[in-house]
Image 1 (cartoon, rainbow, N blue to C red):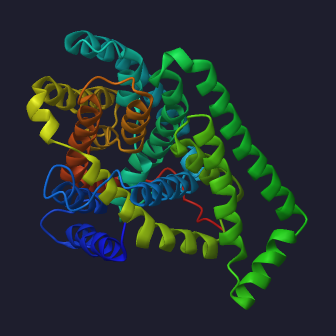
Image 2 (image 1 turned 180 degrees about the horizontal axis):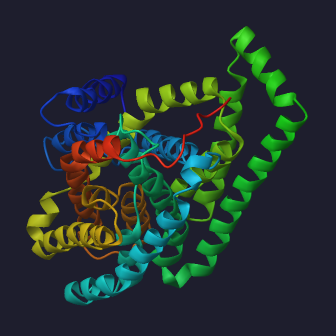
Length: 388
């Protein structure tokens, strides 16, 4: 990859923010980034080569950081959001139960035999996609208080289960890898909590801020990449490494300065590279050669909306229920891991990502309604702002 190509990626990625701020439809930033990736990649003009090792590696760094940001935004310390945890968790479990028979039908209809994989895909949500799309929605409303724990649990469980179901032949290796990454996240949390209790973290924070050293950012990246290395060696998606690191920060309370630094690094550079790379890796031309894959992709997307939308019968507002079907990280990891391990059928990886795009489009269409529902919802109690 050359500097000219990198400049092109960064320039075209500006379409994402431009689409997000225009008034006709508030589209998630990733929609524009995916669109330019599709246009310039394997599907379109083939200017960008997703198989380029440098491009792919930078994209993987971006994926890890995107999941770190998503994990760090899980409100583990917020008492107001814990108030809706019971309903949120119950709905997540209900969606998981509904996903199994639907996945069984899809696997049978399309002859793939991937029931467990489809069940995980249908159950998953994407906090990294949903929360930015709902920017401006008050977290204190009942709908949001109940939704956030729901998507957080779906995110976490799906991330852990994916490596176990993607390749049943090596489930033991995947299980060990997932345990090692999760254990690594717990070690990071314990280390940071020890530093916090002894006052060392605050002292480092002060010295770093005063001298412009960015010590916390450097340390966070070192720990993140260490977890990612474990995940890579054990053939577990780095999505789990990023999310585990993010949860460790969320459990302790991420300092605002570190949060801003990580956000700037992620959203300003690595996340756009990842989403443009992802779009460029999609070869929608394959779908013409495998029309069944089109049906599978659309069926996965609509089925995800169906099982999540069923939570409307539990009192969850329908727009909110449908938006929770948004998925991105888990399908990306499934397509990437499945292709690497050679366990997917021809064009099935593209079909999985097509299904995710269906849910992204649904989220873009309904995000405005969800914000309206959240603004008119009654807050159960005040949300405590994050400290640090």
